[in-house]
Image 1 (cartoon, protein in one colour):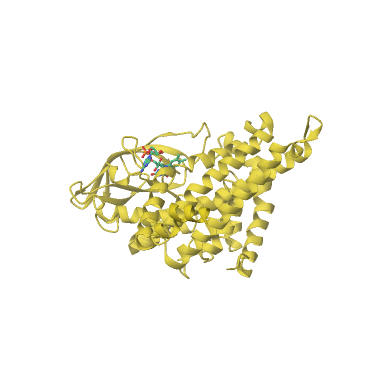
Image 2: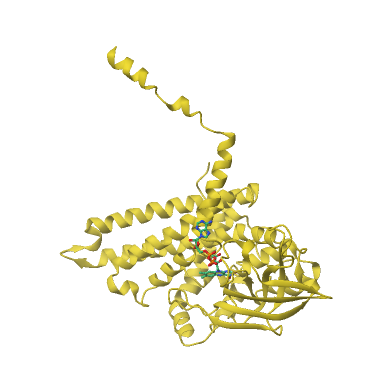
Length: 422
Ligand SMILES: Cc1cc2nc3c(=O)[nH]c(=O)nc-3n(C[C@H](O)[C@H](O)[C@H](O)COP(=O)(O)OP(=O)(O)OC[C@H]3O[C@@H](n4cnc5c(N)ncnc54)[C@H](O)[C@@H]3O)c2cc1C
């Protein structure tokens, strides 16, 4: 087992970190000012994207990238430390065309699109010319159970007709968002995992209405987590992805690598929180001592380092397993890191906020945004409890094959009694 990054990964890390430090970090205040002033996309985004693409720092998330598609092909294990660096600034991954939910949609289209769908939707996404959204969650049903989804996708001659209400649809407020991948039911009478299908719905189709951008913990995201109404929306039948009834299987395929991308970025955010905590704790004094000289703060520093390190090792293991045995066989590791990483981020962000005093919860530091990012990740791509259930189910299944011989671990009380009297 080698815990060092390969030469290739180390070189890519240096390039992504250099790009981040030279071109992205210096623009953090301008980004904030423009977004809060209502300018979105921000004025410099297109230029930064063009620069990243020209430097080959583009579409780094897609191991299946074809030779004729723009970008640099990496394995999940090679990409993980790069995504961690991108995570240091919440909007940075877009600069490298590695941002959710477009990455998940590109993966879906890569795996399941027809040639016509690929030309019309995948290639512009890979070029960074358009953005997209993934519409599964609904206000009226518990959407962590995808079999509950009740938006209807009904065949109507050469078309599909879509009716339903979705919410928390990331990117739907982005001016460049060109289409949704919508999950709904084509056959409510089929077996529960064959009722759903996925269909591409262009943003400008009549009947699509983006109702509002929902803030999360009062955090405003300009690209939106939107509530969207689909009222009698009609798209050609060739907009279906895969076949009727394939929606559930496609959703599972989509959420494997995408889930751990969020975790990689969460680790990057947690690192920034710890760095800020360390800096503040060494420059500010209370009761005659620097903050880090108080035992509780020193313990927070140590605990934060331990938690980040554990999470990083687990994310690398999950990434390596996706590469080697596929997302399905790695689903226990994917679920484990999906539970761990968001909590590590909220823990470390919370400690950093505390060390900053009142300033920690103000907009003058990014800590509140990072805390929010960690907190919402405990739902996005499935709530903790669903992942815990998956882990427990797989653990129980594995234990059937390797069940411990309980008796071998027990010491009979008679044996202990005999030993005492001997
Ligand atoms: C910032 C953000 C961005 C998002 N982006 C998107 C997006 O782009 N597209 C999209 O479709 N959705 C998106 N979502 C929605 C997200 O995927 C859902 O919130 C999530 O799947 C949970 O669904 P729900 O909200 O309906 O919760 P419900 O299904 O109603 O669950 C509520 C709670 O019930 C509990 N629960 C559920 N199942 C179990 C179980 N098996 N055991 C124990 N307890 C359980 C959990 O505590 C859970 O939090 C986003 C959410 C957020 C916050």
